[in-house]
Amino acid sequence: MTPNVATVHPGWLRITHWLNVIAVVILILSGWRIYNASPIFAFRIPDSVTLGGWLGGALLWHFAAMWLLVVNGVIYMAFNFATGRFGRKFFPLRPREVIGDMVAALKGKLAHDDLTHYNALQKLAYLFVIVDVAVIVLSGLVVWKSVQFSWLRVLMGGFDNARIVHFFGMAALVAFIVVHVIMVALVPKTFVMMVRGK
Image (cartoon, rainbow, N blue to C red; front, side, top):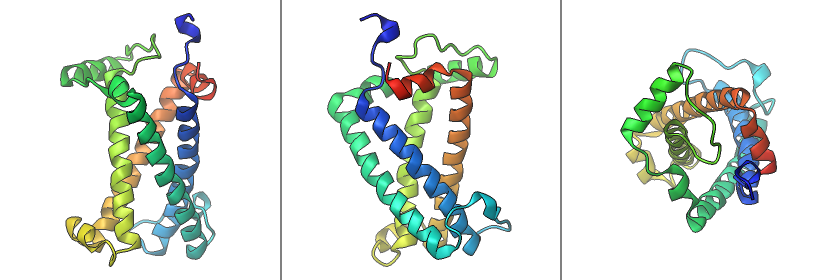
């Protein structure tokens, strides 16, 4: 099999990726509606870009998507570790390579010739988003079940701090998505690979 038709993304990876897309979009849009019901900061999200119609509806969407994200995320991580993909794709990750790729990206010279390997910035971004989603889930548990997860609430500095952590985790995820979509637009072969796997 020649490199240009090699399977890069196995079926389980593509399925979990697209299920995560659905879950994350629902979580963000419904989360914005929930935020508007009790804003943390001195601004509101325009209702036109929220989901749920009202607080109760938004909560239903949010909880449904939360279960999809958690179950799908566990499956994604289990397959990554079981197949050895996690170690192969994300490591080693060296600071010198990250800085070099960052400089190349800022100059518009970051190479994307071999799509079977992640560059250092991709490795860092994907590892970051895995940790970020974990933080979002943990802070979300505090907001949802503050009494039951009291130890986690204490760890996060209280209920209000957990809401702030949840909000900034979401903001970081949105920033990742924006950059991710821009990169896919600049290198459209990556989109084809995530659909076909090859």
